[in-house]
Amino acid sequence: MAEQLRWGILATGSIARQFARGLAVSRTGTLHAVGSRSLATAEGFAREHGGRGYASYQAVLDDPSVEAVYIALPHHMHEEWTIKAAQAGKGILCEKPFTLNSLEATTGISVVREQGVFFMEAFMYRCHPQTQKLVELVRGGAIGKLLNINLEFGFAAGEDWDNFRADGALGGGGLMDVGTYCVSMARLLAGEEPDRLSYTADLTRGYDAQGSGCLHFPSEVTAHFACGIHAQLRNDVRVYGTEGWISVDQPWKCREGAIHLQRNGEDAHTFEITSTNDELYALEADAVARFWEAKECPYMTVEDTLGQMRALDALRESAGLVFAAERRP
Image 1: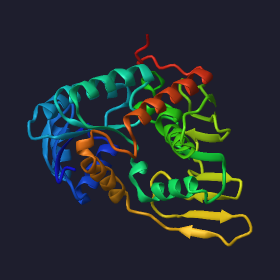
Image 2 (image 1 turned 45 degrees about the vertical axis):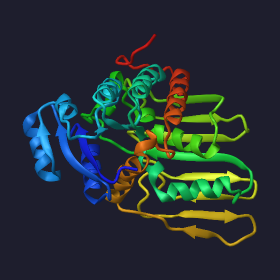
Image 3 (image 1 turned 180 degrees about the horizontal axis):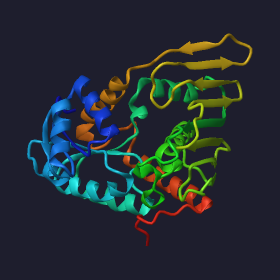
């Protein structure tokens, strides 16, 4: 375990700001540096959140005081900067999805392993005790044999949203931005990799504005999910078993709401395990420090990330979803 970690952040967007606020209330992390394409932007970020602003991402990696980096860059830049961070000897927390496809992921992870640095894909909900309680209930047989998982994550961005998430060439769209959470949670609860996958989406904008998919697992568990960046959904999770069901009001941000357990013929049980948004990201930063010496976190292992990318590849293939920026064989 690392008692304290000095962090650098690559990029200054919304998710970078959320992580910086998490560091401010974490037990183990301090913000030491932030990099941007603009020195003025980086220095403005630093004035608000702390640390030193640099006019490039590489300058953060060149800072010998930085021990870990949070890669908050657009999807298509993750492979490149994971490799550069690993070669600089920095521990890595990389925003999801890790890369645009499993080929890129395999390449990036091979360098991580060669350099012997920490790596975790930044599914922050995996580090929250609400998620751990949900896994405990499902795997502990609270609803009997697992049968089906229903998951939703979607929001209604403006039609002219000026963001890389609305650029199909760069891996934008619902599946890679928010659908990836649904796929990750389904795989976590099933406890195995899917053997059949399908995804159907609205591709009229050049990216999947909204879509829905299905995963089938060898144990006969099925998972159905809906996602989108132009569709305001319930954003919940429901898990069904032979002896009851579980619903989670806010599985992704873990704020207001609860886990509801309903066993057949019994009174309902409610588990309230919530946090603020800042605390959510603090838990993620502290998880990196806790498992620093192990080089990976059991909440989201390296093999889990590789399995996740293979699942996303299969879903995209079924929908005919291709990104111009992705590296292909």
